[in-house]
Image (tube, rainbow, N blue to C red; front, side, top):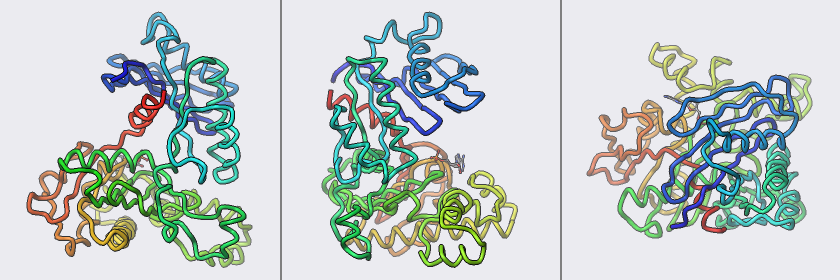
Length: 400
Ligand code: AMP
């Protein structure tokens, strides 16, 4: 096993999350986040392993400046964790959209950067920010190898019948309009980990992964390959999410434009930012901690929201069981999947036909890696905290 420190970078349009991970111990050496980059009041939070979190307000006019501050913090004489930048052996960048060009992670070259740029129109909010992060790192660490790890790559094994929409075929040929799927690093990490926990070969299993966070998606992983996933061309499709609507009748868009006197762009903002469990609960909250509490207090808006959310997940599990002609294990991950016993109970209550029995004593535990079905449950149910940063670090080390 190589022994290098990998800097994992996840760049958003105005934020930058980072972790420095040692490849041998797989321990996080330091982590943090820069927020409000390019906006007044930008700040950085930095936590060295075993140390106190340090929060500072810094002006950060762009991502290059943010990355410079991150590197300064990592090498700082007092709070730093490495002596100099030579102790950072590689950088792994999370890239949201790799289109059909990238089915695996790849070493970043000028050609790769150009190919990522060609995918910009598929993820106009995310890919340009990801590229800015790559350029900023290249400027400051020109000789350090860098790897791009794509959110879409794991899903590139989907067969045609799973990724095509019922649209004129030339839209696929001309514009590559198809299902891509997201959260691929998480679906890959969790499904591999499930096989390890069950002590079985990854290639022998049929696994459904429910990544239930603020963004949420389900995937079907058959014999080691993703065969379907719920997000589509964009992350708006599929499950009901924190604020995204998930699957709806596309004709609703024109209907609402007419009723509300809004244009398509405005309605899409509603579908992305004001819908999901937030909208369903009557703008109460997108946070399942609030919803769970209100549910237990008997609030009708919380009861309908939780049931509608859980029902949609259960429907996808049914569909993917059919797609794979069976399922051996169902995994819950991400904020809600890892920490929401109520949601897990509600979803699995639809799955009696899979011979599922939950071990309620295990299910009430939050945020721990765990098999939560009883030993005689025909289909296994697992909670596996996702670790996208570690997965990115592993992919990076494997390539450099
Ligand atoms: P993520 O996008 O994976 O970070 O998930 C964020 C979401 O997880 C939050 O918006 C909450 O809805 C949910 N969450 C986090 N902690 C808990 C918890 N202890 N109980 C229930 N839901 C939680």
